[in-house]
Length: 329
Image 1 (tube, one colour):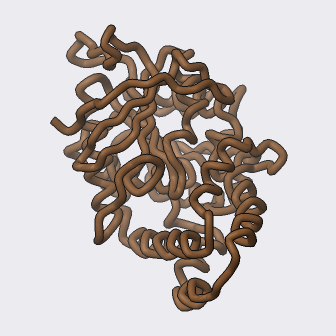
Image 2 (cartoon, one colour):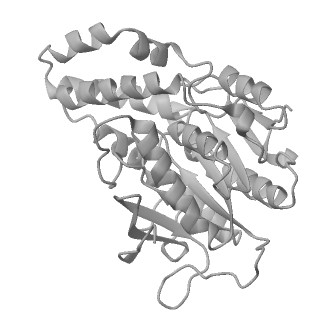
């Protein structure tokens, strides 16, 4: 058994989230205890309903977040999917949110094992469509490369490792600068002040729309200078692993690549390159979205995911409704 649910709790009401639609619980995947946010029909004891059909026609969407993020980034999208009658879960990846810490050694293989365990659990309940933002996009692509995993389709949003921003390239290229900075005593108040200015600009397309609750989640990761430099050093390790992360010729399932014009971490050119490297993929370009479009426009993201998931289960990749996207393919 790859997962065991520990408890089911209602989610406090928040922006775009109603308690009855989204539930929280704790499970264990590949040896990592983590928190799960879930939307969709349940039985009387709070567990997901199993479908009676051998080949379910409805999708189960698995949502993976990015580096330094958590399952909370998908709360509003989960609520929208619940309203549409689509079952979905979002998990805290190991090392982030309320999940157990990563173990020593390479990061991507550990995240691969965790993701595979989530997929296997969900595949017993329905056809899995995997959706990932940033680091989650990387994990989704890597899962799609594994023919042993039952994945009906993949959506990759701002996956790094193709054409990245100057910031990511700097972190990857100048380890000495990071070590020097780590040795300098900088007051925590200065770190927090800088983070309050930088974090919203990295997450959102428009600073004016930044939600204080989501911004606060990220700021809690950088309470002082030591923790900030530790996260940057961890990010550098992860970026170094991205050099050999992809074997895109092994991806045969439907793939939707979402590229965001106002992404300050992973440029839209990165998504376009990924699309070019996977000939059967579809590309959605939104010039008005930032690095985390699930925060910019959760309703539109939910519509795109629902449309793609339904098409993927029919053996087709149709892109997204014209009313909510600007597509290039």
